[in-house]
Length: 184
Image 1 (cartoon, helix red, strand yellow):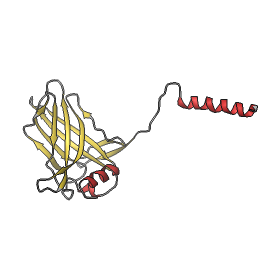
Image 2 (image 1 turned 120 degrees about the vertical axis):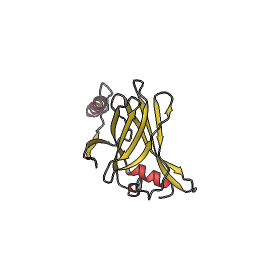
Image 3 (image 1 turned 180 degrees about the horizontal axis):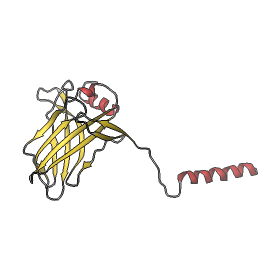
Image 4 (image 1 turned 60 degrees about the vertical axis):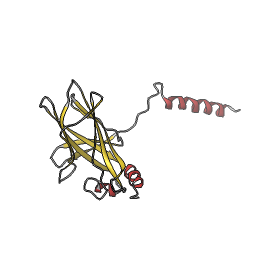
């Protein structure tokens, strides 16, 4: 082995160690979009992360999913599922979920007597619908989409909690949901 090859191997090894870093930390870029909703509120929507967690110290919405579902007529459709966690002994008296992404604003779920799962969790599920319903017709295009849902939660003590939950829906997820319900 000649000296230049030997030095180049040491240099390559040293650069590899430096590239890995001493802390083992890998930085990933994060992107977000500012969205102005139909109710005039500006919301920051993280892009690239499909996990949802929005809270105010008493209520936290920490899951939001679009799920393929068999409809009563045996055709395939879709539902939305939500999970909210209540802290400090708060219990929901009513929960209204609205799509406020753009006009017109419309309710997607209105529970006047929400039932708790465990002692602090609420799980909500919308009525199953076809993709041609206004609730889901936006899923027919295969572009990335940001939806914003307003949760108006009145707790049993009469306090009103309003949470605006941005949901990033990448085109790949829309494609998956569409293929699962046969809308390809």
